[in-house]
Length: 147
Image (cartoon, rainbow, N blue to C red; front, side, top):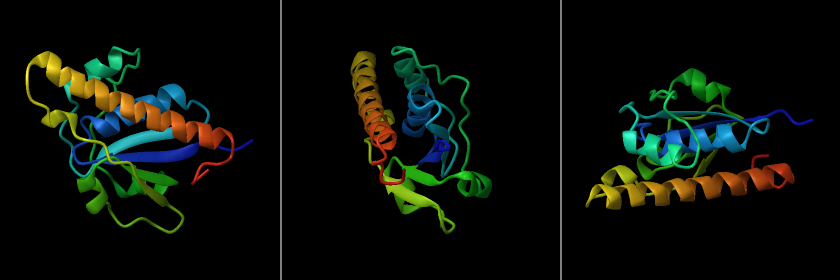
């Protein structure tokens, strides 16, 4: 039996995209993934990200917005950056820690009515969920790039 993949989702502020990715990983990847998320900085959780995830039955309200630490990186087998800034500023990874980049637009930059902004959060949420599902399929079949 394979041990769960230890994944760190890294973003700029650990408020939206990385939080959603961690939530999906916990919900969909139980037994296959041990996930945590962090940011280059910690901006606090975005209430719209919490709301968007709650709409599909995933509670991320108890997750914390944290700044990446050396210990987090050392625990990880795979660091996945979910935005360009985090990809460019990703700390140097120790030998054996793989890195991948899954670029997602920042929903926090959305403008318009509240419903229009939430639609952007839902779109990014769904993109992240699809990417996690795709990764899990590859992991289950032994075809994951880092699996």
